[in-house]
Image (cartoon, rainbow, N blue to C red; front, side, top):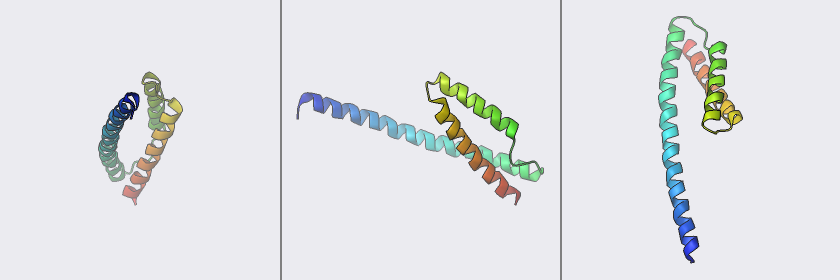
Length: 98
C-alpha cells in the first residue's frame, strides 16, 4: 500500500468518525425536540386547540431557510426536512386529540 493510500484511508476514517458523532447528535436532538412537541400536543389537546398552527409552521420554515443559508446548507433540503418533521408532529398532535 502506498503512503498516499494510507493517508487517504486515515482521513476517510476521521471523516467517518465525525459523521457517526454527528448522526448521534442528530438523533438525540430530534428526540429532545419531539419531547417538547409532544408536550405541546398534550397542551393543545387539553385546551381544545387545533393540532396544526399554519402561521407558526410558515414562520418556522422561513426561519429554517434563513438559518440554512447562513450555515451554507441547501435551503430546499432544509425546507423539505422541516416540512417532514412538522407533518410528523401534527400527526402526533392529532393522536393526542383522539
